[in-house]
Image 1 (cartoon, one colour):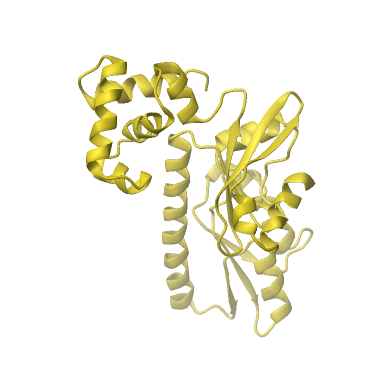
Image 2: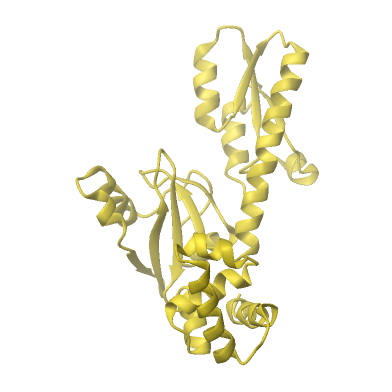
Length: 264
């Protein structure tokens, strides 16, 4: 573990059977460490040892190769998983850089990953945020509503969770397949849109437009995201510029960023 922390590996080739801790336990320990969520771990296992394959994938491994190792096959698999890992890290960095409080979990509340901001927030509420930890049972019950009729309507509603002086709100961004993407809101601060609306006297719709301006989106992109016409985006921008007493979108974006990052 100390070697992994010091060398920051891009990929790990793990033997399933080792003295002391076996490869499966070692993989679980690595995956629980922040910064190791996206590092692909490929297991080496004996030929036809199917129970090793099942345990390897359950422990967090992405693939396996059978012994004796065919190097060309191993290198091909490594290239694929390194590419996937780079894309995953890039997406995670993008979420972190925009200050998004995002947690990905399954329907049982087991955490797959979270942005640094989300991790810090839920830890302050006394919730473990490491990979494979579980969200509180109240959140799990709320997520469990997805198996009931009219679940989509239920999950449109936010879920409030208060502990340790923290007041959190969970909102489902997407819930297709095994992974559920949750957005967290610190109700003491409010959403990004609410903060911008309060700071500049904007409507919530104007605040949404300003938020995406601050994230560098063009008018056409904002129109697609918010499901409105580009002409409506322009009208909102006119009001935003008037209320912020600026003439350029860069000036408006700068003022928005100052509000959103002042307490982070």
